[in-house]
Image 1 (cartoon, rainbow, N blue to C red):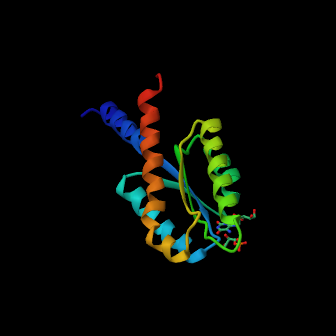
Image 2: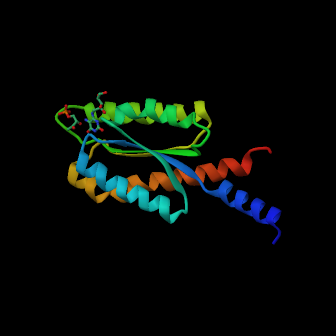
Image 3: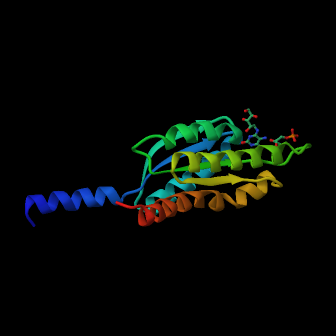
Length: 155
Ligand SMILES: Nc1c(NC[C@H](O)[C@H](O)[C@H](O)CO)[nH]c(=O)[nH]c1=O
Ligand SMILES: CC(=O)[C@@H](O)COP(=O)(O)O
């Protein structure tokens, strides 16, 4: 292989590595740590790379940060991770539905995949613990959507 061929092969390889940003709602810190570890394992399994990890206080605070990250040229996809647990009121419904809706807007406005890895509503902490892998699968969804976009975008 000539140096020029080697360079273009390296560039093509770099181009195919999805660059993922993680936004982590830390409202329940232990669960957030579990989900982050699982999400980073998914990134590794996909031969992708984490370009940024940004903690936010709660799920509802994630869309603004996801939007800022989705504007960046070095971010191919964003995954938002967190847990919304049921309390005494319907606060969990309000937070989860608003977060989901706003994150959908980020994806469309920024033309960037935003994986939804927020567990809840109608969920206890124990149930969330059992669903850590489901939250982490938002990474796969974001990477797969990035690949889908590449396949349908005109050169
Ligand atoms: N109850 C939960 C929240 N609530 C907090 C909001 O997400 C937000 O931080 C607050 O309203 C200030 O903007 N967040 C979670 O992630 N999980 C919950 O169970
Ligand atoms: C339990 C929580 O973290 C949150 O969903 C809010 O709880 P509450 O409905 O009791 O205000």
